[in-house]
Image 1: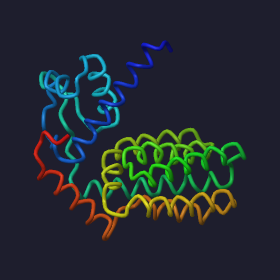
Image 2 (image 1 turned 60 degrees about the vertical axis):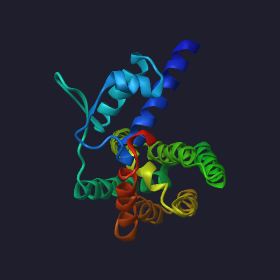
Image 3 (image 1 turned 90 degrees about the vertical axis):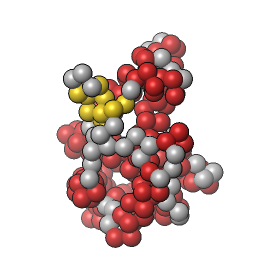
Length: 230
């Protein structure tokens, strides 16, 4: 990959994150048409990285590409979001169970490195940095399962829920809590305790009770903010 290609990829990734934030915050509500000209001006990019970002969001199911309308924000009602997090919890539990049995020492090192990156972002109160490190952390577990099909399915749903997982990190005290949960997950995986790793990952991912109420409240609060706050 050339330097120009890397720069274009970075720009596209940044735009994707900004659009994800707008969707999760309610600035780009479900059913809204994402106008390419307006977004290119808003994010100060050309159409090429913007279209690449929209393509990635469409491949993750976050937006829908419709004939003659372009990109439309997908609609996810609260009950469906809960169902998706339930499935995500089970997929992650399966990954954790297998990773505890199959991860090799270099993979343990990568998991620990991702956890240190999460800790640094938490210390800096950097929710976006934590989200990126958190994705690296979970991806290390998916890969550590040594089950290619499971890894593919887990990461696909992870991408689908990425805007909402990122938004959770803005809930008060969620980053420190997530970090503590990560520590327990790492301990279980490194110790080879498959069932404990599965249990801790399931509990870490599923949103229910107060955590779901906090997420819904954050969504409602974000939607009340002016649209140009993205």
